[in-house]
Length: 461
Image (cartoon, one colour):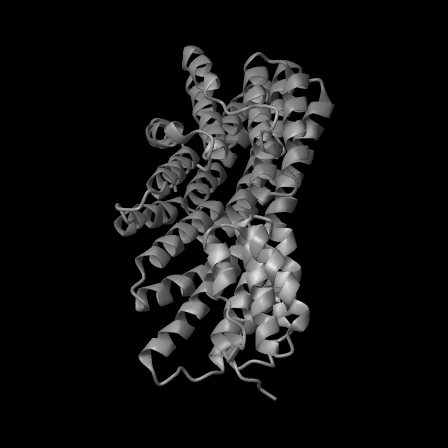
């Protein structure tokens, strides 16, 4: 049985509290009157408004229960747009609170209902329904992106982009383009990622006071860094840094990320330490810093320790960062690549230390596991390629050939140009290496030098 949407209660007083950001007053008044309500629509609105007070207060955990309570009335009121909005908000809160498994069925429910529903005769109503569906596409893409299922993330972001273009909504088109760029970068399809990020600039609303342009400069910097185009990456990072710096407090995480990436490239290019001293004065570290900022500081300490060949200190800083960052696959791969780089450097210093080489292999295996779990095909292909290079350097040529072929197979399947080119070259050079009179020591030195260049970057694609 459907109940009327007409509420007997005048909500204007409570709405005024919310508009004035007097959320505690609004909550107090709603909780006072809630027990007197008998109509489902009144109870729905009460829970709905309670949830928004908590959302505006940035207390997302407390918003979950009223959103769930409102959701329970979905069959008792006939305004579907209200139900869709509440369901969508509940899913978004779950995603932001990292309970993605609870968000997915809610978002799929919205899409399935709208798929089975013939769009309203009224164009206005039809577009309302399309906008709801489009938001569900975006948040499903976001859920799968955060959960590490990149093919599904790509699928829903592509649907999000298509519907955003139908609705001619520049903000949604921009959001979809950036999201697709991020997925393509994670997959190692760097040229595609760059195209999507560059196209995004066309849809930025210049009249809005936002940092989307700065974000895009940072994202493009990441692509150039992954390509090994370090000077172009620095140019983009410095542009983003200059934009974020005037409002340091609200952009603290982005500033920390940029400083780390600038220093990371400076270390690789051998730039002077004066720039490090200047940048570290801007680093937003204090007693109440967010965990991710503390993790970036550990990464910077790793760069310093590695440069000074303090291997145990370098390993300690990376492991400290790992403990803070948890299961985020992007950071975990960086950490394991860094640990592999430490192991390789220790092996270079003392080639009789077989434990260093075993350490490297174990970290590459960890990268492979994370990559397979999260469909990170470029990282998987690269880790196998690096294992093949090590086998080649150790004159285990049959093993190397098998691994190069495995890496090439993945690169062919997903069109990873950088790995394809490198694997073909390595397979052609294996015969020469088999006939070579060079010692194992000479070969491994040459291979490790190349491997260290490969770690942390994909190279040109």
